[in-house]
Amino acid sequence: MGWREFLGIQPKGLAAAAVSSRRGQFDSDELRRADRRSSEAWDIYRLVGEVHYSVQQQARLVGRLNWFMSVNGSDPNADLTDQVFRAAFGSPAEIRDLQVMAAIHLQVPGGYLLARVGGPGGKWEVLPNPPDTKTKKKLDRSDIVVKVENKDPRDPESRLDSPVLASLDIARELLLARGQARAMARSRTAQLNTLIYPLEGAGADPK
Image 1: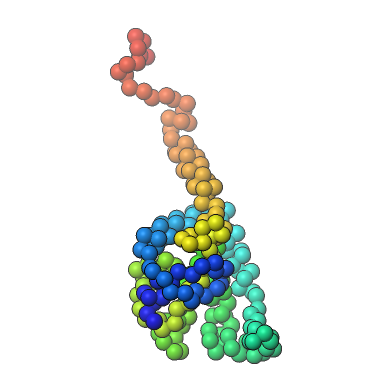
Image 2 (image 1 turned 45 degrees about the horizontal axis):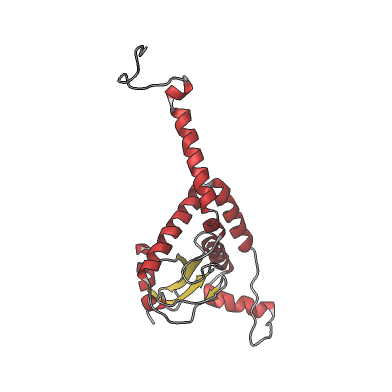
C-alpha cells in the first residue's frame, strides 16, 4: 500500500503512539484544516519561549527512557528488547533521536509519521503529519509508514490534540503582547509622551 493510500486511513479513538489500521475516505478539507493548525503550532513552538522550553525538556526526558516489548502477553528480557530495537532502528543513539523527535511532534502538532526511507537497511525518520512538500518526497522513497496520532477527546474525528494546540489561544496573546511592547519600545512619540493628530478638524486653537 502506497503512503497516499495509507494517509486515507481514518482511525477512531486512537491514543498517542497507536498505529491506524482502518481504511476510510480521504478528506482533503480536513487535511487543510489540520495543516493550518499544525503550522500555527510549529510557529508558536518556535516563537514562544515559554512553550519551546517545556516541549524540549519533556522530549529530552523521553529520549532517556528504555523500551520494553510484550509478545503474546509475555515480556522478553531486556537484552532481547535491545537486540530487536537495534535491528529495527539502528544504534542506541539513533533510537534516542527518534524518541526525542517523536515526543516533540506529539507535543506540538499531536501526531507524526514514522517512515523508513530507502528500503531495507534504510534510515527511519520522524516526519510531520500532515505532510508538507518535502515530507511527501521522503514518503515516496519510503517502504514502511506508520501513522501515529493523539486524537482530541472532544473531536476525535477531525482534530489532533497536544499541549501546544491546547495553548494556542494563550500563546497568541503572548505574541500580541510581545509585539505591542516592542512597538512601544521603538516608538519615539510614545517615549516623548507626544500625541500627533491631523491639523484638519483640530478646532479653533490647533496649537
